[in-house]
Length: 238
Image (cartoon, rainbow, N blue to C red; front, side):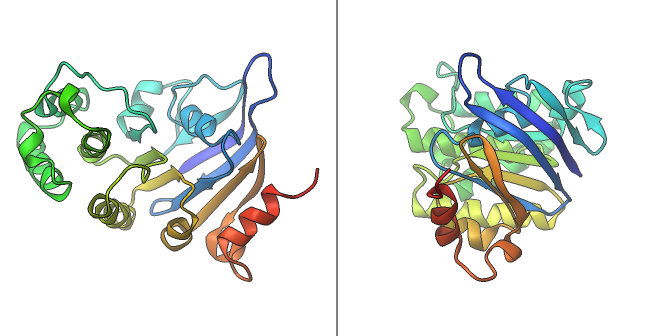
């Protein structure tokens, strides 16, 4: 279970960030964070994974407090940022081996999982190349492989579909469904509302740092499409 209680992160000198985020997710939940650019989605995700120190609140994963025990929390976490900053002087396979070592992944499991994921993401022939020679899309696919290597209990992705080709998108949607069915908790931010409506069972809609909707997807979209709801909420007069 992931519990987020009264999370607040505001940038100094501005009112931008996220105010009072409360969210509880169970094993198997897939939650979309949606909102306009600058609404607070990435701030929320970077706070949840421990990149940003938040001003107040509490984040618990299966009872492990992120603030009090960050190492144990992050051992159960997989994170894919929107703009991955990779070690470009490493080869793809070396980078994945480095990630596996952080999570103490046995070599046999590492080889098996890399083989499967690289084949699915059409990166098998490129893992021996320097990351500096990769295109943006290839770097994204490499990050996805690293994300799934250690079978994390919590998977967090920031705009994961941007720049992916149709084959990689198809794989990612199905892999997220498979991971959720196996008990993982998944959170991702997106502007692709049609996919979110079909893929996710939970929704958080943020506008100007305020959580406007936090509910089940079925309840939110009972009478309107997600796109229509997004338009109505984000264009409402203050």
